[in-house]
Amino acid sequence: MKDIPPVIGTLESALYADDLDAAKAFWTGIMGLKVITALPDRHVFFRVADKPYPQVLLIFRASATEVPPDPDARLPVPPHGARGPGHFCLAVHADSLDAWRSHLEVRGIAIEADFRWPTGARSIYVRDPAGNSIELGEPKMWE
Image (cartoon, rainbow, N blue to C red):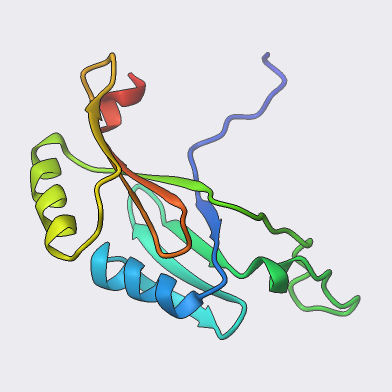
């Protein structure tokens, strides 16, 4: 597979939500992410990490992003959108998972699952306001 150029990682991931205000409140107030930019009724973008390069979570309203761009659009992003719950996993250190669990429970966020993978890595699963499955997991899950 010599002809395939290398990939260096994930730059952005997207989830979809109809209520962007609820998404913003969850991702900033509960999960601690910072808003990069927001466009009412279309999207809100969050910084997940800065290093080794910027990593971003994009939350879109599918009904807004399914519409093709105008022919003269400055940023002609192709239409996209998804319906139903998606999944997003944040990497966290093993020694912070108990603190995360407590943090979420105190704020009324139900823990959907908390278990160890065959690699020994632990994951905690919750739902965001749009019903997306949000995982907090140790990176060694994929070692």
